[in-house]
Image 1 (cartoon, rainbow, N blue to C red):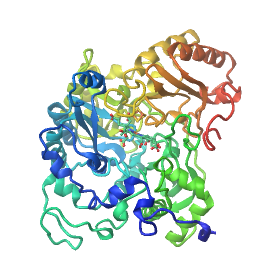
Image 2 (image 1 turned 120 degrees about the horizontal axis):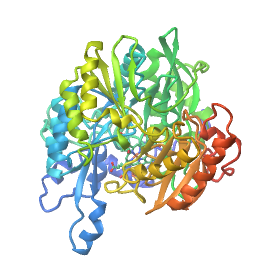
Image 3 (image 1 turned 180 degrees about the vertical axis):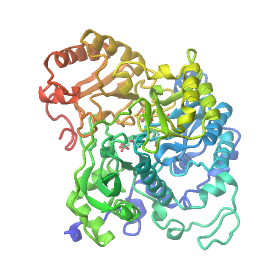
Image 4 (image 1 turned 135 degrees about the horizontal axis):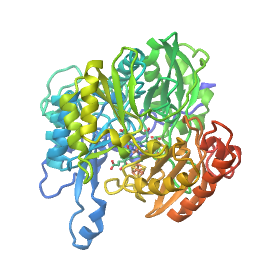
Length: 587
Ligand code: SRM
Ligand code: SF4
């Protein structure tokens, strides 16, 4: 069966000029070195040249410009206000207070006095000047953090469930997430050379002066010269909380336990959110569960699945290069067989598991080891000193007092974790004194809301998201109040474009930007991330959204069956029309 599959991917089998231009760019990059080091020195511009913009993504860095002032600067014939976003590699979202304090310091000095928690459990520093990139990255190194592979055609940040209650299981699964992240991170010496000033070394470890030669395979045993066709995302989830949205991962591991003991994982492949409006060939897809593996097979499975995508992924058309399309184009059975052939054994049948939600339980929770955890809602993950709350200062005060860990949640929230019972009263007092406990108040909708960054930094944004969702939630809250639903947990996720960075296609209410002030409205996602939603309204403004939700939520209040979630209700009564999008979108 597998022989019938034509490998049209690797540069070893096809001339590079037949593939997409990014493949040539990667192949010629001398394993991600490009001319990045020289571009950092160029003083006449705040930007870096051409291909280096793309190569720097592999180093976790995005060149952006402030879109709020883009037109004004163009009118004044000025260069766009270029700055960089640095994304930290933080597998499982766990960090120490010392690491927090370093991030805080770097944010104050180099990143507009702001930190941004992301939907993949890490931090972004925005507004960093080109000259500040090395100080930022070296500052991160001081606390054993880096930005390797936080972006680019490689394995991105590895996620892991937060699970405040299940301390032992969390520790074991987190260790695997960290191992997978370290294992899959690119091995090129480019990062150390460019950012830390390390000497260039050949694959056998010998120094070869600066610059280096265009080595292919040996420097990157897993990725080779052209890395992956596209980004690739791994996540580990511990049922019953599907907080990482495992069905949105390219490769998801679902923990299977017996009597509280970790036995292994069900493996899910081919999840992804991104789509392009009016392009049915692109669509969100939920990952397919293909079988069970014992826990000691995690790294072997990572290698096998990544290698299949590396070799069979579409390297001609980047819009179809994600693993989900490889699977749908070649067939799930074919891909499973290719993975099994690399592993040298077949997957066992998937084992039973059940999810209950994909959100965070806010407030205090006690772990089975007796320590306490406080989950704090951070609106859209943004940490700054706002006019009504000095959040950056408050969390610095917490970090100075805290002796445990922090965990960034996949819903852009923060757990102040591992607090000894004896320290809990002092932490409670500090949270109250700094106004942090009040952040967890709000409707069931607000507590389950999430928005991507969008304007002003995201170059792909078509509409506001982070800066708009809170105000929209105020208005929907009024509707919920009228219908007696203010405490009902309902997930709402907004993105400024269809790429889906806040995973909107699995929210009960999803909104994706089309143009300034205009959104698609989706309804009917599963409360625990198990079902994609469907489009209810296309390219509409706020009033149309509110009117529609008023009607829909009114019916929900009156017609739901006990315990029924809004998303399930919307599907059951046919609130949303039938399939409008690509194949897997409306399963
Ligand atoms: Fe994302 C691109 C922000 C999670 C799908 N994403 C971007 C960029 C880098 C825009 C760009 O390419 O120039 C955004 C930077 C905005 C900024 O100014 O910070 C961006 N993505 C984010 C974050 C920060 C959203 C947030 O508010 O938290 C998340 C960072 C995650 C991290 O820490 O690594 C983020 N992005 C996601 C997710 C959710 C997830 O992975 O669980 C998705 C959907 C899942 C998926 O990958 O399918 C996602 N981002 C995309 C896509 C569409 C990919 C596709 O297959 O079509 C793009 C565009 C692209 O890659 O071409 C994109
Ligand atoms: Fe930018 Fe679109 Fe991602 Fe939002 S969803 S951060 S607008 S790429």
